[in-house]
Image (cartoon, rainbow, N blue to C red; front, side):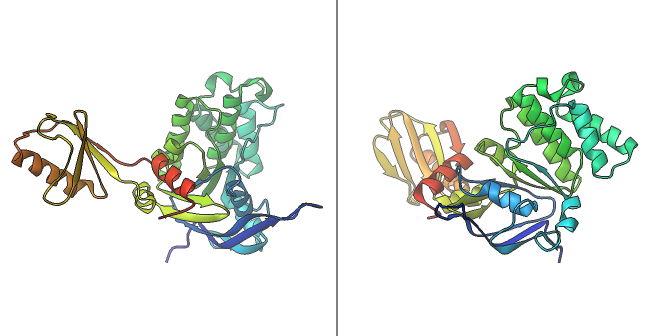
Length: 316
């Protein structure tokens, strides 16, 4: 059986500030990330996402529980874990006295890459992040989005087996964000594994193979976007237009599919769009509606499911 890239078991973290009440940041987080996966860790501010990443990347000790990276215990053997990971910290900043090109190259050299390999990887990362025009400007002169791209370029250049990305595209414009997505997809095709946090739910939906929703210090649900939608109770909506006199009010198909008319727009909601769509088309033909105009199938978005889960306190 292949060892997962990351395995967390009942990880707890309690902050104990002096002269103030304890703060339980993590209350027993268990999560497994397979090799080559892209997993999005989602949650509101203060849910514990950054705390979990800090523990997994050997920067913070848990109160209890364990995390292994490719089978290595992060608490017992951090020196074995660190060469296997690379981290983009939340709101991290590049070294102001370096240029993006110098930043990436220097970091690679400190990780043991040869001069030739470091130079090649640096130029590839600079190009992927669209930093060519500012590659030789001091980081201190760059915009916030450009600095963030320099940070991401530094990490993706390593092609580390496991990358932790904490809000990697914060402050970036849409074009830069898509450039990061393409780079991360390229890395996983090469064999890297990625665990990222993001508040951009469209980013998680397009990029992550699975998402894990963290709430109140615990993982509430883990799975694909479709799985999360089912757990949240969010349904697929089928809409179409049809003559109002024929479909006045609300009706039910023979299979019990509820069709509701509002104005000239008819809609129904279902957990299984395939059979529902066939039933709807057969019903329309039997009732003399012919081909339904402007038929659309709107699958639940990750944002729909996330808001439903978080606002209701957990899966239904």
